[in-house]
Length: 208
Image (cartoon, rainbow, N blue to C red; front, side, top):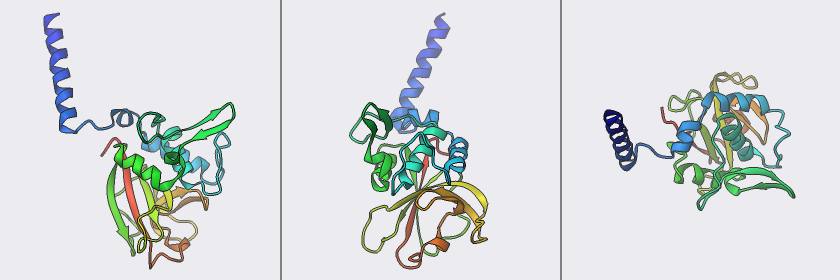
């Protein structure tokens, strides 16, 4: 019994030390996020949106948030300055800008330690992005020369061939426009890719 208590005390001390050292950041997300589940959800609803959620004219961030929550298992965040959720209530839908707006979504991910920033890429982005992996999030700034506001979000789901362009590399699912396994830099679909587009990436916990 005494030895068991001593082990518990040592374990608690070790956990406290890790927290102080900053190695156990955002433990809820760390325990919950399932990249494979997020990718599976994304593939299922990329072209046919989930009817159990609202669908917006600009739906990209709503879609990626669903992938993290429904597929990846990250719980709603209803505490703190930034909150991330989308819930059906008696009068309709209740949701936050962190759930639906790319810029606010990025601030929640990074500033609230739900994800690690992996950097950014200007044109020409490589077809195969060796820094990222399935389950990672991409945020796009279409006007990087004039502002720092994110305009679009997608989720990395696989490595393979973009069926529309034939380009082989990292593939994403997205809404607005709805695309299934498109090349991650979206160069075939973005007429301004040579001039203004900057793409950022983030990896939700756990880090690998």
